[in-house]
Length: 276
Image (cartoon, rainbow, N blue to C red; front, side, top):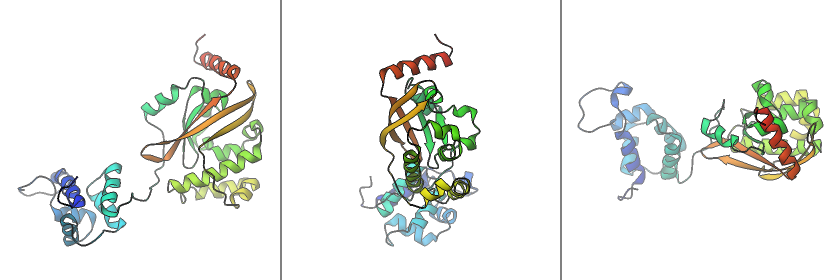
């Protein structure tokens, strides 16, 4: 933390000094390491005078657009960009949605530790991008589906098999649509889901009617009931968890309520893994 009352300027100078000018095509002899102020201003496409004032603690509060340009010019990481906004504007930046193709091996290993509890990771568009063995047994074997078919809303509204196992399909459908709307807005993905919404409105009059009600629902924790073809009627308690630094991802873990169901899932998982 700066001791001169200009934390923003101190942070900018520090990050500027860490960059190698040669990487960006800048040459010339230098008395100090890093980029010059005018070089940062050039990369950020802002006035060199304005950037100098920011480092000196003059000129008032910068706009979010200016801070985003500076963050790009300094090649800041997402945590650094957030810190820059907190110093410059006293608030975090607006969420920027990023499409997801997969998760880290570490997060997958975490999912796999839940032997009898189905666990999965979904995006703000409710695409399933990761799951564990228990999820393939209790929920759906997502690995057998094409990536575009792993969307929860597509399965719920367009797949009769998924629809039939729901204990109360209409209640589930309304809940999922409301939570989907909230998640997309929270992750800044409203425009990214437009095509999916249009597709579902054409494919399902039921989805269209529910979507037009504009309900917004929080998806934290609750109970899910399924008519499973092997396990019978089962009840699962679920909890949703945000993944730090990734507002576009959410992990959901389902815990079977009945001890007998737990043992059945454990047996099925071990059989699938080739263990007695």
